[in-house]
Amino acid sequence: MEADKLLQAASQLQAVRDRWNDEQSGLEAALHNNRMLWSILMTSVTRPDNPLPAALRQNVANIGIFVFKQTLETMQEPGPEKLVPLISINRDLASGLLGRA
Image (cartoon, rainbow, N blue to C red):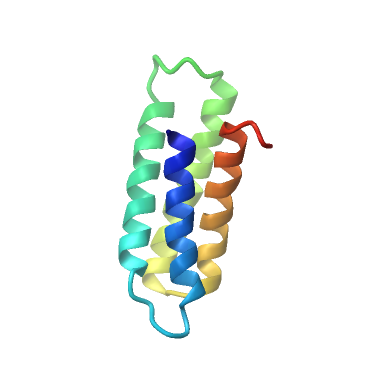
């Protein structure tokens, strides 16, 4: 389920990036959706009862912090290139979750 949500968020961000020159509509919604997804992921991996190894939990938390920072930066100074890392992170993590890494 997490992989599907990550891929959906990546697709939404990619759609905004693909039509950037025509319009930027959907940027705020796509960033909000991605931020909410990452908030849930961060809450999950930082819970003391999470069964994942501590190192993996820390790595996901660090990625989440980067995602939040990148999102804020993109909201403050929008640019299509700023969506690339968010899209890549979501796709890469989803790929790992699906065993395609």
